[in-house]
Structure formats: structure tokens, C-alpha cells
Length: 109
Image 1 (cartoon, one colour):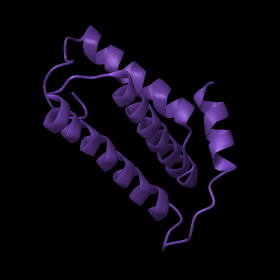
Image 2: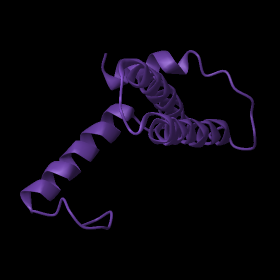
Image 3: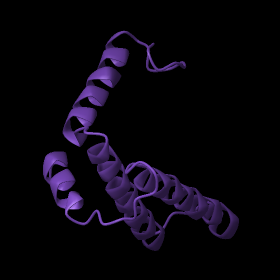
Image 4: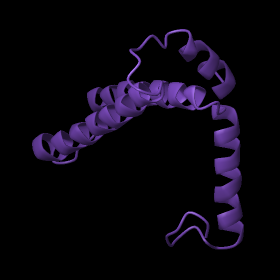
């Protein structure tokens, strides 16, 4: 599935309460789901000494899907295209690679 199709389909399920601006709810959801990923990794190290198994990967894949849903709907609420976001990001990363600027810090290096 491509990002354009995913964004269109995920939009059909975007039924959430209005909290101030429309983008607030998916923004909060994105933060919450990202926290859940961190929690899974915390428990991976606490309980499994960092050993990844199929159950862990299934759980992380599920959480990544939730992150993608919130990101997609946040982008839609802001009038942005996931397809364009992905394209611009990969162009930026390859430009950094070409200029030997992958390492370091700063958004516009």
C-alpha cells in the first residue's frame, strides 16, 4: 500500500472528538502511541534483557500502525500529504548522505 492510499483510507476512520483545533486529538494520540512504543522497549530490556522475539515484533508492528494512523490523520488535518512528506524526507536524507552530513545535528545541515 502506498502513503496516498493509506492516508485516504485512514481518513475514513478518523472519528474523534473536537478538542480546540481539530489537529489536537491526533497530536495527543501520536504522543501517546509513541510513548507506548518506548514502554514496550523499556519492558524488553527490563524483562527480556533486550532479546527480541516474534511476540515483541508483533507488538511493535501493531504500535507502529497506530502511530502511522495518528500521523496520517494529523497530516490530513493540517492539509499535508504523507506521500509528499515521505518524498521530501528521503530526498533530504540522500542529500545529506551525498554531502557526507548524515551525522551531526540540526534540521538543516
